[in-house]
Length: 110
Image (tube, rainbow, N blue to C red):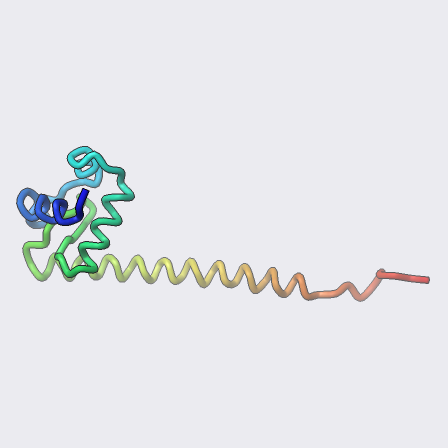
């Protein structure tokens, strides 16, 4: 399915936050999987199409405020992902430190 069809559908039938469509609804309507919905929404957003989302689903933004709310939500997700990456980096740092330590007692004795 072309992403343009999704944009047209949302603009025609799901304008504004009060008319949000769930991912499941879009999956059933277009016969696609949730990951495909997410990829198309992401591509449309990158192209400058005002596809917004909230806890109720996806919709074509009717106001600047709906776009701003979606930007704020995405920004919070970025912050959360960055924190997860920092935590994983700390795990690698601990493992790197543990792997470079040499035992000082024991070892080879004649």
